[in-house]
Length: 270
Image (cartoon, rainbow, N blue to C red):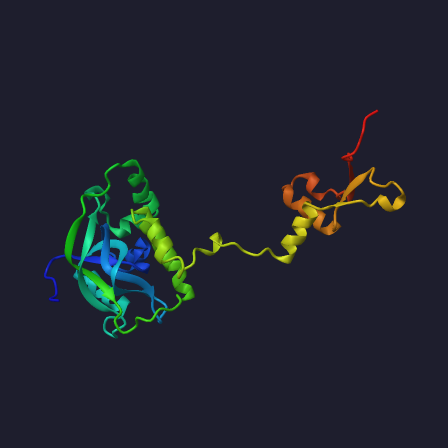
């Protein structure tokens, strides 16, 4: 396709450039102008470990749209590795959902205001009409890797950048269902959101703070009349008590009682 001759180029981002902080760093004069849907393409992680889109009939890719000038486009070419054929510059038709003019902001301004959630996201929630009518936009710049199209796993350092971009994109109107269906099975969520296996110390702490019942008096002939809850580890119990109270509270440094009695379940008042 011929190179579009215009003052600013519309650029469709679908990977880590969804992050407005990264775009502000790579392209200081870039401006967020809306979101778009690229039809007949599918999202993937190629063998290099980075995001890519490949032609696939019936599929679509969601992303954000930026307006970039010639200088920013040259910087973006270097970041995407156009000269080394890591990515190629292509121009496609996309369904463009432009944001209202008051929401079309420079990426650096959004970052300076504390991020997309503070600068734009809250305004989106308060506004009923934050987008204009969708239209078909031609000659939208899309960086596509044509030499690396084999499905693979993302690089570890790339996962965090993608997750930051997903957070910004969903705050700006890209449906979260799209990422749940097409991205999350490839790129996991943030580490803080994963279910982690507790450490042995955490298990010991939990067992000490929520111990099991023991019939320790049964061997002394008392049968099941009394039930006692006993701490498994005195050190673990003391640590639990110290973690429960601040350093200036005397209760934190009091020596814990190891055994205390409970009212038995079969207790009868005469």
